[in-house]
Amino acid sequence: MTDPRKAKTLGDAAQNPDGTFNGARALSWLSEALNPGRGASEAEVQAIYDRMHAKKAKPL
Image (cartoon, rainbow, N blue to C red):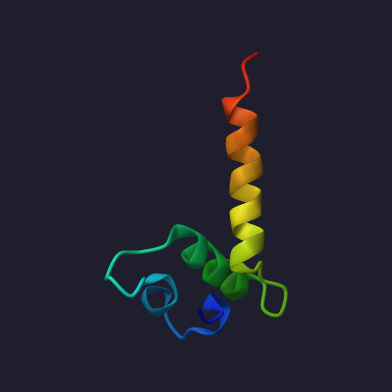
């Protein structure tokens, strides 16, 4: 899979081969658009999501 940060449009960055959209790829592209040269990779975005999801799942 190509780096979503290099796509010209959000649609190009986030679209999966089957026509669905990938949120981690979309956020990676957006992070690059907002912070040129310092955008988060798709793996970094997914790791952040996983950490936040794990925190949310823990009982109080």
